[in-house]
Image: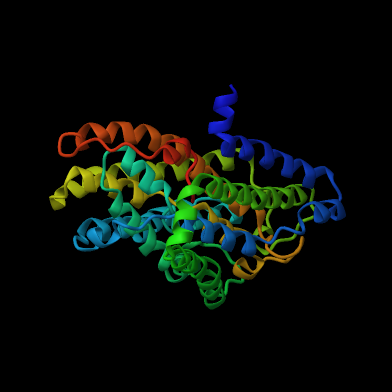
Length: 360
């Protein structure tokens, strides 16, 4: 039991902090909630998380992958174009503006910052392709994410695409660039490699603080106190949460399976198709939380202080993220049967094997 809890502490944290935050907001006073979570600034937390994951992100194989850009282009197309397109008709079916917008946020954010590489290695695939897709989609998220949310969310919100673009550029892209630049110094690179797991755990713990703050405001809105711009309607029903979760799971599975088997028509080897499957279908949580919880981005009232916007927008992303943890673990074992026919099995480093919950 202890080993399981240690290995899956992030999922345990989500399971505890989400209901705790909802209960705090639902039954606590606004002043109490503000004291508990008002100090959490999602922008600062996100920038710190992205710096840490970029700082620990090894990029030695990127040049090799760049010389054969075909698989990278296919995965980027799936992640940044096809997934948002597929989410569009599903999102507009939901009556709740929060869930409509949340599903589009989940589909429009870039690839995870390291999980795709970890699972690609576990599947015996080419993790250099996954790494390059990670960097390309995250570097362009300040353009692609605002575009999809502004044009396909189907929600009447006071959205300023220019402000969102600038915020993503400063809060997501710039910290990643700084993290990789700092890593270029050999002593700092050695430090990052040596303490990779503690730094990763720190980043994940910071994510949990933002999740808790968003859940707390969700509780306030359940109590009729919140007034975020994206939540003018009554709170979503339990059935709506289930359906939006199923929609997210379906999107991920279609992108995962379609990426692996569909890219076969281009004559792409199985080791590269594994990278396409994971990098094309996985989505990052920090950028999604930044978009979903930022009042500036979604035009929500700053009820609890900086960085807390429309709370129920975060739930589709949480569901998508949690589902991809379990689905891709099984998929990696299945895809490995094909990659082993053309490549030697790849054993992830010990730090990566322990990091069951990805560094997003």
